[in-house]
Image (cartoon, rainbow, N blue to C red; front, top):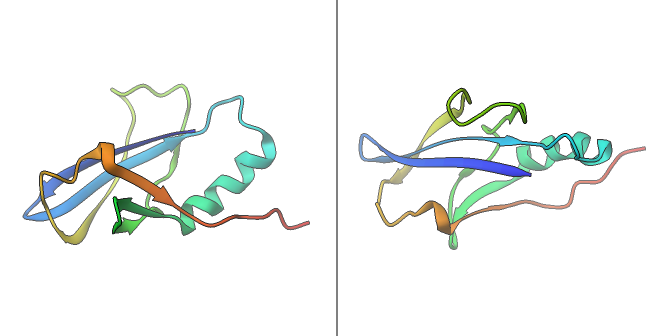
Amino acid sequence: MNIYLRLFDSGGKLGICGYYVMPDSFADRDRSLFPSWINAAEIYSDETRLAPASFLYNRSPKANEFDAEASCIETQIPYRPELSPRRIRLRGHVVRDVI
């Protein structure tokens, strides 16, 4: 799983753009469960909650960085340059298959 995020200054607020890519090799079960997980997950920088991850959507594994469209949001968090993408984490809960 690859998740791409870009943090930026949006009029003094933190803006976030992103998307995720599920490789073709992803198991069918994981492929069906991951969207539920991402819809309930949250984006953090260290211990600071930045935003829900539900705005992220799946892109084709064939897309490259030049043609990939991302969805974006503006948070209520003041933009700070030290909010480095290297410190960003997604946190979510276990999602189970309903049979």
